[in-house]
Image 1 (cartoon, rainbow, N blue to C red):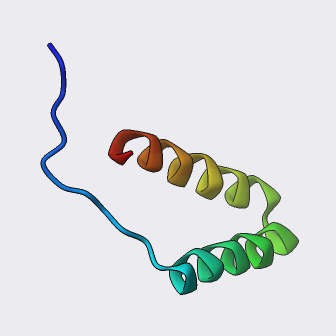
Image 2 (cartoon, helix red, strand yellow):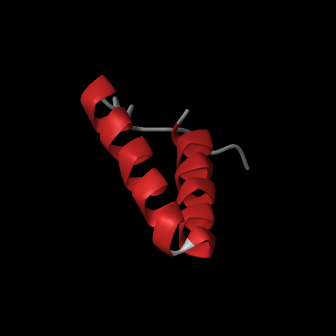
Length: 49
């Protein structure tokens, strides 16, 4: 069964930069948590895109 996307999510450049900054900050304290954040966001992007 093919999944059909009903919505298109647009992430602003500012939001993208905030996510990168957050992941970089998190990587300083908890590299494992930063990795999970990046992997989760990548997975979400693939589902929406």
